[in-house]
Every structure is written in C-alpha cells, then in structure tokens.
Length: 116
Length: 115
Image (cartoon, rainbow over all chains, first blue to last red; front, side, top):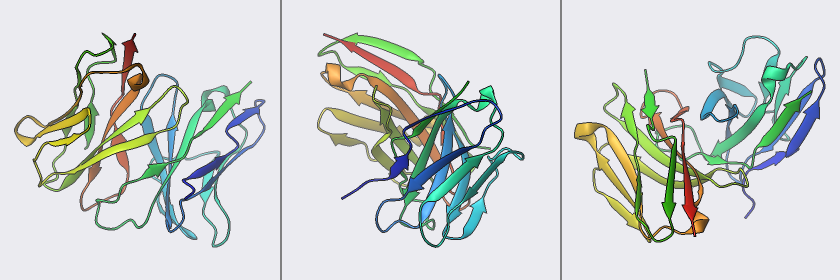
C-alpha cells in the first residue's frame, strides 16, 4: 500500500551542479505532477506528465529545468546548473488518470533542495 | 484565470477551541473542484477532502467540517475542539473541471494549537 515515493528527501548541491529528483507514483497511477514550494509560500504547478509524454509544462521555467516519465522507472525532474533561487521543496503527485477533472492528486513527501 | 486566497496567514488557538480556516476562490469555470490539504511539521502533504462545484452539501468528518458556498465563492474548513496534533499548514486548492489538470493553491494558513 505504498504511497507516492520521492527520493532523495534532502539534496544539497553547489551552484552550477545538476539536481535529479525522482518520483515513483502510487501503484495503479499513470499520471504524475510536479510542484515547487518556495519558502513560506504555497505550491506552484510545474509540469504534468503521463508515461513517455509531457502533457502540460506551462509552469516549468524555460531554461535549465526538464522532466520525464519514461515507460519504465520513476519520473525525473532535472535541474541543470542550479542557482540559489532553486532552493525549495519539490513535490510530486500522482493520480489514476487525468480525465474527468475530479481526480484527486496524492502527494509524495517532497524533496528539499538546498543550493549552496 | 484561477485564484485561491487564504487571507489568514497564521492562526493561534488554545487546545479545545474551534477554529475556521477561510478559503476564497476565483474561477470562470462552471465545473471545478476544491481541495484541502494538510502539511504537518514533517513536511508531507496530506489530502483531506475534495468537493465538486455542483455539490454544495456541507461535509463533516469527525472533528473536521467543510462549508462550501458558491454564492460567496468560499470553501471554509472548521476544526472543532482543536488538538495539538492539528498544528500544521493547511492549503486550499482549486482545479478546473474540463481543462487542465493543475492544482492552483492558496498561500496556506499556519495553524498553531497550544496546549
């Protein structure tokens, strides 16, 4: 009965390095969402993916950020050449499907990224 | 555009008091969904409730109750007889019914329940 899994839970990077955040959705869920929570703020949508497809990336910064959800394995949020402003909590959520609008998104525990 | 406003950034109560967390939303959609999530000090996000725009019945779950009023675009959350374990940040969120899958979150309300 595993929920959404994210790893690592905490990640420290120096400016200019790459950060890779992983998310395994709940069993039976094929839709994944990534959100970012800056300190003392609410969550902001970044990207929505299905297996092998990016459906909506309207919240993703145009540069340095990318996401994938391969046929096999977890979804990956990748941040290249990190800067201090990337320090935040990154949450992944999953739902059984994306249709109907009423699907509840269940969240993982988040990855706290700290850029030194 | 969708918008969710949680005007109360921080609330402090003493254990056993009742407390209401306000949520006001803006949307042009006729079909939409409202959510509440709890973020305890440990940091994870816990789903509490989903409400459909076409169902204005209030809901009660133990000490938790939700009051959905379309006339005022509000979806308020009341905790009765609060407990220290209720201390958390609570987020209200909105999702469009027929377009897009993203959740639009409010800024959150930090609830502190003192013994």
